[in-house]
Image (cartoon, rainbow, N blue to C red; front, side):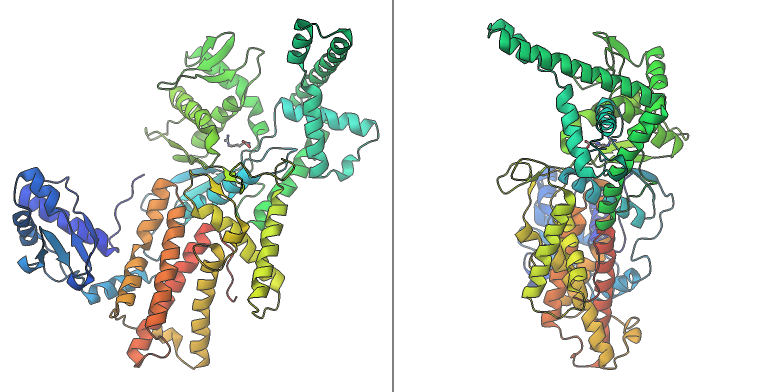
Length: 616
Ligand code: ARG
């Protein structure tokens, strides 16, 4: 989905007009007009550096090339007309915007759609996010999947597309059967109260069940090879046979689960409810729109897998390899494994079924997977296999686009994946609690008065964690630092919340002074000071930033934009008195600039999924 350039951003218009001029002058339509901010503001707002590379390409003097561009360029009422005086140095073209053009465009931005009218052809986008696993604590990887996935989903919604969120819960297969069986044994022995199961207990039993099923066959082989004596051998033999028994029990439990045996299913349901309650609570606390409806567990595909595999085998899409069934994907060495030698299905088999459902039942035209980068090979295999199988074909003859919005690892201060001191996954709730505690300490240190500091701290803490996660380039690892993220200075969530609250205060003050802020919202805009111009240019870039996020699936671009905007606003506010402006017209114009900034900031922060605070 490539989106057409917006017409509201003057830089885009300049680039388009200069491209036209280059085409008219030289018949070249692939030259980059190279429009950027003026290196010396005394000569204009922007400059085009296109003449230098073009001169080289055409074997002409760049100043002559510049003259030809200038002659053919029609910048309309956007900028002062270009003349030979606009050419400087070796062939730079200086461009000065007309302030009225900026004002007109700001007025056009200042509509309910904020420069993003509904698309002519809304697309259906399915976003895979969250992806928790039953009986396990959510970890920071799930935090990223949630926070980034939800922000991506919100951007598509904001652009007017139809979004379906899918929480692909790991709720099926042998590991789940192991813990289900373990729970049944523990409960039968009176050691476990199933009525009051909590996730910590569940997670412990999950690990125990895994250990019990892990036969130390290598250990036994080594004992035999090195003849380490009958005692060691007997010990390990017992462990291995015990593990084999536990594994056999788990397999039996899986079969019963697949057959909907009521006794087994009841225990599985408890596991599911216990895990999902915590998961959905965390999502609600994080302000991510992941609900029960959006959760489709792997179990929901269980009955489709045999049919899919059979179909792929019959059509020759899949082939046998070493007793297993695989789909070979062009360009990838490792084939996609869809049935094991023992007949079992895999993670990939379920994902194939999910793609088929998402495209064919949900009408997904674009499928986005917000999942850890370490699953990159898996998705390349599955995407390739799905295309080969024809599961991505849409009724109109086009093919759904599948993308892995891969994210990097969250690291601790030691640069290793973030864990607790004892090496375990950090409970997400604990992580959020700590951010909130630190936010509370930070606001108490600022000694500002609040009715309910804990509620404010909650929003700030959540915003801090979410923003820190969103603000780094998605595919990169980042070091988790509470100190940095809860700071009110720099590119942080709290800083942006504060910037918005400060804008609110300006309007409170205006009303206190009896200024008609409603009238200001329609006042003529006058762009005079450099700070006003810089702010206006950033505001006008906003629609393009949203489109860029949708194209690249990179929410950090919106973060950077909002931060730049907050900084530009701060400079404007320092240099250009608003309520204390010299005359009413200036004050009204500046108030309107404040109002537009506030709307864009509010819209942007909301689109990122940050909790907002009107007063701070
Ligand atoms: N449950 C998986 C995990 O924790 C993530 C699921 C991602 N989504 C998918 N369609 N495979 O690693």
